[in-house]
Length: 277
Image 1 (cartoon, rainbow, N blue to C red):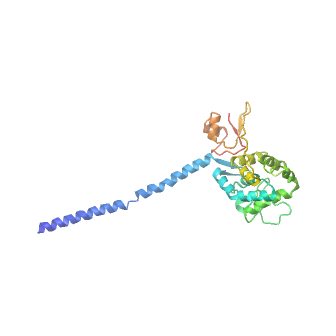
Image 2 (cartoon, helix red, strand yellow):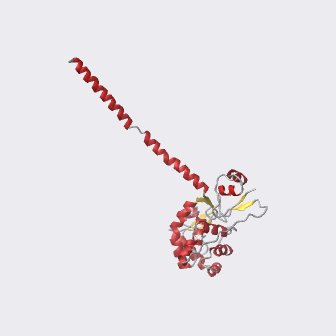
Image 3 (cartoon, rainbow, N blue to C red):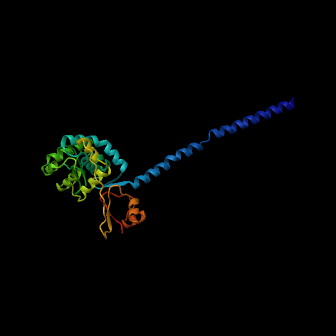
């Protein structure tokens, strides 16, 4: 009898021991930890892709942004630009391109602090709120708005109410190239490359489509072939260019291009000239 009791006791210990081991395995957090690491790797990959598609927007904003951010900006403001085109006659493509360039796709200081997406200064007669910002001179006066849509409306009123821009409204509303050059000629911006930057943004992000929607047409720009002048050491960045594509085109490595141009990253901007020899 004693032997039977001892045998039963030992069997019970064995069962409890096995059950405890299974409990430890079930509560292990190893699988969960490995799963949490995956988004970190994905984030690094996304960042690398963004750097390859970085766009330097050098106007009032002076910021670096990415193609994806510009596309989101366009989605947010395309309807406002189209409505303003119907009301005031300014091409939606021009309005959007200026907004992108001047506000850094909404990331620039003026856009963030004053909802001013076009770098419009106070000028004589402005009685609304204002902020100070360094531009052509230190601490210049810029208009402040309650909402970005007010900035878009004021941009249209600004152009339609000043005589120096009157020649713009004699142009075809779908001719964004003529409008971009006309803005510079009328003194909207001091940057000599301002028209090229607007045109490049319009073509890269297909902003002309919104002009088409308002004008009920199906215009498509012809692809421009860029020919490097014989013996030239410089190339002007065009729509769709990346350092990788340029390295293949000019038989260089990406690192070679960066060293030639004292670049710390892969960011390039449309209209920028880079050394290729």
